[in-house]
Length: 148
Image (cartoon, rainbow, N blue to C red; front, side):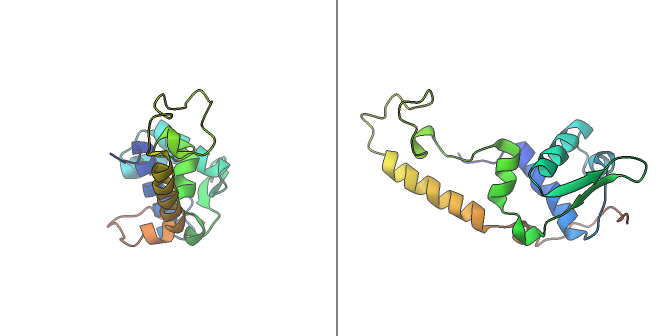
């Protein structure tokens, strides 16, 4: 089964919230309370998004995080990579795996490596073509007030 991690689900939710609320500046505590998530989880996601260049932050009394890229410029693939690292279906779906520690034990007798690489590439392309703006099409019933 192909499934995004829980952290990826949370990450899309949080970034979508920033995208839907232009100019929003929010702290990890505010976001954790609004979305009923552990503060450490939210703080880790915000840190990853800052490191990926999606958000910027300021410390202090009037601090918080805010979106610095447009939702249309952040792909779902970008989000998944920021949270979970490289995206791949199977070890054999990645070029150049042969001879590495993660290489499949059945590589010499399996005929599905090339087709799996093709499937992996198509999924990566779809994830890259799907942006945060497309993921924000439905608006939830609540939002945090924007701080300016």
